[in-house]
Image 1: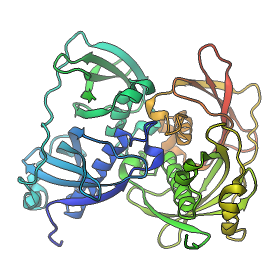
Image 2: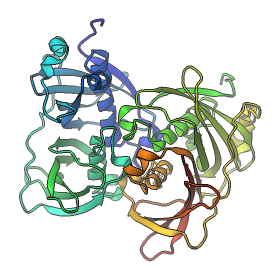
Image 3: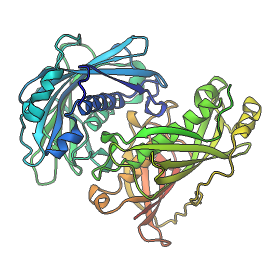
Length: 255
Length: 255
């Protein structure tokens, strides 16, 4: 396989039917483009999902944060640059930079990925894949000047704001609720009038356990005391006859 | 503006996170690609949504039918060809052909579009735009060998199978529930176990009135007596204090 640059660059379009009532690309669709860029980048370099499936392994997104100065508007073309800035045995850290063709910066993203064995669902050694090939692509220098994802604090007083059922369109290839669908369901907790006045400045999500179609998801929310218009959330999953378990946490800052 | 061919060809990828648990592209995402192809095709020829907005007009999708022999699989590239096969004062008919790079046919689509004045919400004369330019691009000969959308019959015994709330992510640029979201909500009426055994052969939707965020949507379903695994549906919208009104009808054939 030809040696490629450490940083991948991928072109996207803010499709008109993927934009909200302010003409802004939905954050869920932007998140999906980041995941695509991650997958194209790792596939081009020999350790993408399609190859990993052949050795019964897959990437699992553990954390994602997106911080935006501006959101791409309907019909706007944008570029996602992505690169690995750290690779360890059980986790890699992948950064994103989102710009337009003139170099104007929309924002940045950071993510943490684990690798699992698809048969045992146990963590798998990332550095054992193709003899640690991923190490050849680590770039520690290219700047990604946003704060890393941090632990999202939720106290016991968080208010239950909604419980939803999960359905066919929520479920991904692996039979789990799609990572992006949590983002959409969380952002649906605010109504369109809120979005007429507020824009998402930073969105952070940490996945703790997988949920499946048929699980109910409950959303618990607190206003953060640290900053105005910041909310911390916990999402739990529940299936009849089973215990309620946490599936992910989010922190959202609106401006 | 340079005279283009009557038929537009657009390349798409069945993105892995847009595929269901059978590795099949979700029909909602396929529908979105058809709408994109329609928009690219009409924009390239001078009467796309972006131009129409400048003269206070827009396209409104009235009917869409998709018939599939096969559904694109995750990572599969596909081509959508689209062309106008009829243009009248208040309606145009647009066809779609979905193939892979080798010419293998996934399926076809047909759609009916109206044009409205965005201020009065009243129908607008399509042939008055750029002096009937659209007539120069009508192709009546290129084959689209599927049955046209037909009237979906619903009797009064249709069973209410689900009522849902609509949220921020359901709402498009115009403040209406996105056409594609109805398709997703309808297909969510069947669970993942159903989709392990059944594939969508034909999906037909006719839009009758617009709904908005905050409307509840109710789904009424009957099994068709015409054909096994065919279902007819009516979707109504309801807002507190208002009458329940029909918003669209669907007909789905599974194989």
